[in-house]
Amino acid sequence: MVLKAVRDGIRRVNAAPTVLVAVLALTFLMALPLGLVLRGMIGESLGASLAAGAAADGVDSEWWRVFASQASGLGETFTPRIIGFGAVASNLSAVLDAQPQALVVTGAAAAYILLWTFLAGGILDRYARNRPIRTAAFFSACGVYFVRFLRLAVFAGLGYWILFGPVHDLLFDALYPWATREWTVERHAFLLRLALYVVFGSALISFNLWLDYTKVRAVVEDRRSMIGALVAACRFIRRNPARTVGLYLADSLLFVAVVAIYAAVASDAGTAGWRMWAALAVSEAYLLGRIWVRLVFYASEVSLFQSLLAHADYVAAPLPVWPESPSADAIDRP
Image 1 (cartoon, rainbow, N blue to C red):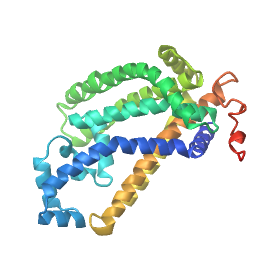
Image 2: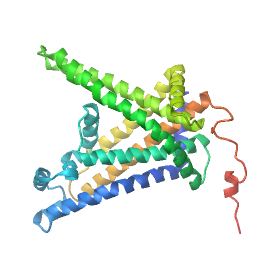
Image 3: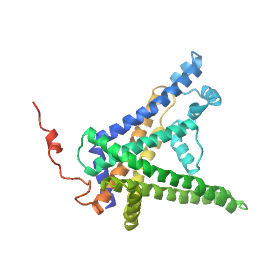
Image 4: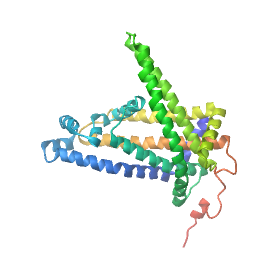
């Protein structure tokens, strides 16, 4: 059933390309202001110098070092770590180690999370209906569930604060130093830290899984109470632990595959001439793949829930009624 849900999730995502296009477009619009600001900072630093010509032909490491030493705010994020697979590894390290980020990065991340909070209701509603809907209906669902998901975001924010605050501090700032204070073998310390990463990652995945099925139940069952949706999601996961966790891991393998392909391709990309532009294209393709995988998470979770619990009164793929039937849109009008 897990593999069936994954296949059905992929089918639902591919059958609704406009959802992917909408997410990509809104993501681009969110990133555009930051890109323009960073472009201005780089242009001001380069000016009409010889370094400008060198930077246009490829990566100028000497200029980049000087720029990084003088940059502030958003410019501090423009480091060599953003090139290729290093960006993925850097982001993963920042999450696991709960590294504080620059204020502008935190603000951009918060705005992006808010965007996903708005889109989540429409995305889940589209995948639950499993049939074409009009643009107005999609954004109407986004608006309806946005307010509900904002209430859920309060609980989610509290949960993430506990995980990245007290729990993370207990594991890595208290337990790890205490356990390794008399150890002399570095390998043993590394293995313990790796085990603590697994514990922390498991707690984070479990919380994400709970939130995902809370949103699924809220949309598919049209729940208004987020507390009720949280309780219902917990019951659903408790009754189907192997299937829900197995599906999450199967979807995670899709993400690992996307990252592995990106790592293999990005390693061959260059930093000069056409190879530099090829590296940029590969990075953009990776972002597209990452968003596609996130949508597969939603669609496959909806599919699993509907296959196990949905009934005729739910949003789950209702029978098309005129004039909302897709066949109505296929009629040629004079």
